[in-house]
Image 1 (cartoon, helix red, strand yellow):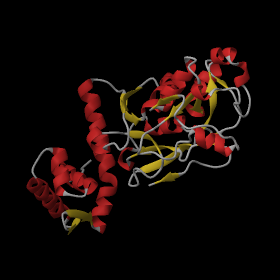
Image 2: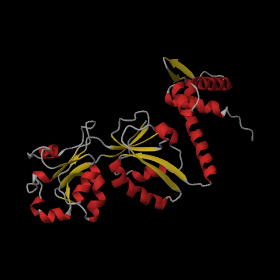
Image 3: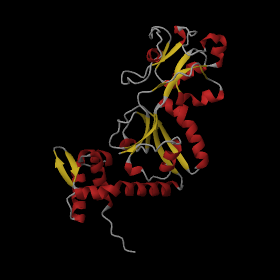
Image 4: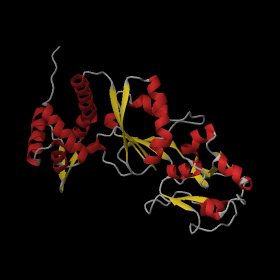
Length: 309
């Protein structure tokens, strides 16, 4: 069967320029000069006899013909890259690069991946624990689990879950302070409250002040008690019996199930934003990604996950 294909180097340069929006960005990614990228794009335009880009200041914008070619180019190059990696490494296993927030990685994602691999033993992961924002292209990231829905508007996004916080402590702490149990936490000293502070870049994490205010209770601020910078660390402090944390239910599920933590009240408060699964459209066909996306999403009873691009 005769197959007519465009020059691969030209196609690679075109795809990088289209994705980064400039010849400079494409040159930096591939490791050549912007002039070399420009020449490769001209070669591709000659092959198709179509104009693929329009210039706007220092950026390039796809024409209608460029959009038509770009639609399948990223996926095709990714497929070639996957086959090449499998051939060179002598393995048919697929490795997904997953980027995730620290507390979510340790307290929620690790157990999810452990059970997933039991059903999909041919898939392996490269797990990167990092804060937002991340560079999908530089890190060759297949999937990002982030907080919020607006950080990566150009990528495909699936709303994963809107978590909530509720008061939790260890059984040992409750045994020492039985009066702590109750809807208003009247028996919990202010000095035993564990506060979580995500830093100045976040304003949507519910605080103890907000939780008490929501239910008509008045308690002091952070001048008393513990302050930690991670949701997972707040739960660690609570597990060690240091006090009462306003813990995220999603991150505390395993400890609540095995009895390392107990809920002192059923009064919960939602986080300001949901967690999201984010991935480049061009990687949507990478081996194992769709199976993992389906695995990570909770069963839906009233509708489907929200997917946007």
